Length: 330
Ligand SMILES: Cc1cc2nc3c(=O)[nH]c(=O)nc-3n(C[C@H](O)[C@H](O)[C@H](O)COP(=O)(O)OP(=O)(O)OC[C@H]3O[C@@H](n4cnc5c(N)ncnc54)[C@H](O)[C@@H]3O)c2cc1C
Image (cartoon, rainbow, N blue to C red):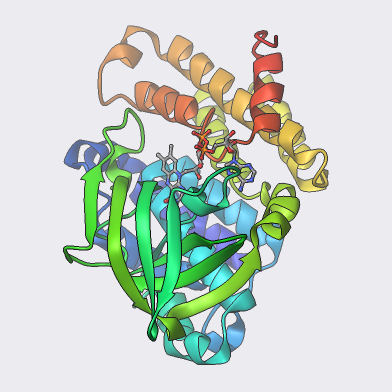
């Protein structure tokens, strides 16, 4: 185990897990949790070393996500959005934008969320952008934005004709952005909102990247690995609470399946991870007994989180594989 994975495990065990029920009851991931992640360098986990990042390899990144998710899924979920923004800015941002923001993002002095799916998913976009003078103007509705109120910056994807434009927008209380909380049965502390965007102007120098939508869709399957670690983390939490059982070997096999699957195999591997978390959370409920029905118990929170992971970050092929595993394929 690398040092950073060991630090993540310690942080999850000593801070995140003991506080998780209180965090959910309070309805918001505390900034102090994110500060602790930043102090351990985790906001720069995927960032380049020359910007203060840890430049961690994929195996380390997935292991850290799994450990943090095992501790507290809401905190891990908010932090994971930040990682996504750092990764795209580092990989594709123009030098000036990288120089302005990457160092502070890697050190956790600035935090980012993402608003991507409204423009990336197939079909008509829910968020569009058009140029106007030196600005780009955003209009539409982003159904899910996590970490609202915690993030200083938002990596936004918006459609301009056949292209997707990625922009680094400021967040904040402005009349052109209206956030409505999403009422949720799991990860409610992740401060996830529906964001209505009306004539919101972003300076053209904040463009990170412009990519044909068709190119992004063609490459989508290759990027499905990381969210699978959220389900692995929930399953890991269950195995630790249950004690030694055959689920330990299943978890190792499902993790190996995710690690070795190529783009074609990833939807099935993601379905296997989500199904395992769901089943393991059922085992935790059964092992806990009636106390698992009490709101605030770790078993009932874990079961709700496992249900959320049956749908989060899904794709048609993941859904089909999951329905098959759950015995409901058409
Ligand atoms: C609690 C919660 C928080 C979320 N937070 C965020 C967030 O912070 N930022 C954010 O951008 N999204 C966020 N999402 C959205 C998420 O990333 C997925 O879009 C969503 O889980 C899939 O939902 P859906 O099945 O309703 O499909 P939709 O997103 O409505 O997509 C429609 C269809 O297109 C497929 N699809 C979606 N994206 C792609 C793609 N890139 N390539 C190919 N097919 C695709 C879906 O599988 C689905 O079949 C959040 C979702 C939830 C539930």
